[in-house]
Image: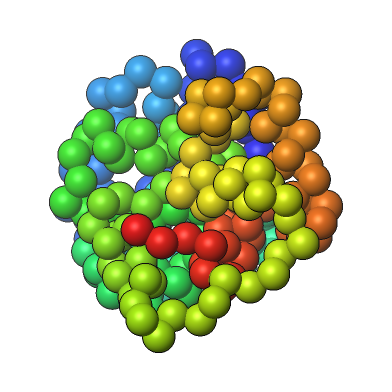
Length: 221
């Protein structure tokens, strides 16, 4: 986790896609940004895991559909074997099932390939800082089935109302400073709420908290 990192820290990125032109294009987009360094490129999940173990990236920007090992399998391996690496999915798929599976596998965010360079940079910075990020198209697909008349009632969580609010904001991708501004409270108070939430739910990662919020119907559009 990198929530307390200074803003001038260089974020080290590993790109993973089986299309060389896509890798080339994304690399060119990111290399022009201050504070971003593309340290390696891989063409499948297996290669990504091996390179990441060697190069120690902060963020892996990865497609889903790839040969040898796809993005879903790779994300699960990263979550289990290299948990300090933040996985951000960059995909053309707007399928809700894909997005939910990626969250469950430990990915910190999901961005569609039609996003602007500014949004891609924002997504990278957000997951690097410990948050989760979904581009607009991914969010619409993810939450499209929530709010229907047959939606189950919100489950009891054991959290206070304020903690539930903080959990929702975490699941929506906000980091501590943003949550503090949204709720007009101090960052230290947010950190206390966050620790209480993690302790009560026995969940230590933002991706895990997002998964919990989804499963317990705490998030709606």
